[in-house]
Amino acid sequence: MSEHSPSSERPATGSRSAPTLELGGSVWLRAGHETLGGAARIALLAAIRDTGSITSAAKAVGISYKSAWDAVDAMNNLAGEPLVMRAVGGKGGGGTALTPRGHRLIETFHAVEREHRKFIERASAAIEDFAGDWALIGRIGMKTSARNQLYGTVSAVTRGSVNDEISLALPGGQSVVSVVTHESTETLGLAVGAPAFALVKASWVMLVADEADAGQPLRLSARNQLSGLMTQVTRGAVNTEVSLALDGAAGSPPDVNSTVITAVVTNESADTLALAEGKRATAVFKASSVILGTAD
Image (cartoon, rainbow, N blue to C red; front, side, top):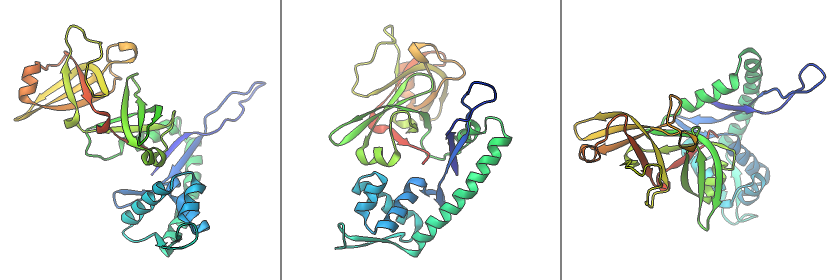
């Protein structure tokens, strides 16, 4: 799997230079259906190989000691066998070494990465807007049980004493707020301007039918309050599924390009709120209910 982004500029013909987009890319490896690691995790393995210390390796790749061990534990679990072995009492807080499988994984990754670079160069030259299309293919190919998969860009990172608050700007102009640990912020590379996606289960989304004072923030403890228009209301035996097309920037009404969020409520709640297509509502969910992810 891979993702791509504009990475450099080259001068155009003529007396003036104009930026031309070129493809960049990254590779990550899978164990079954689970992502084993990408460039960041392979870099951590290589640093462990080179330093023989998890403390030194963590410093070398710019993450905390805990984040490094969390990543190692995840890789060991997903691989089904140890990639990294720990020896208590070694230099730098305990010696750490790669197993033969860990060494081979680094070599395999670099070999695949070289071939991937050749593929990117050929595809970039042959296919118009390959970067945008390939990045989209990667996003829509993601499998998860969460019904709501919202793609956006990190617009703010607020550090707290224990957790961080991450704001993700959605394409239409509204934002989603998530609370994650410091380690998650580091591991996912969450920084302003970075692309990311938010996962929210439909059962975690509450709906509030808009009243006459629509547009005014609701007095609720839930940080996420996304307003829009109900475009589909599907009633089942017990629950009702509601699709809400979100408003655009500055409260502009939704259009065909609007982000859609889905909620599942009981039939009794749907009747009480008189939920119906064409009516306005607000989707409400806690920041702690939002799971953030990145492609690598």
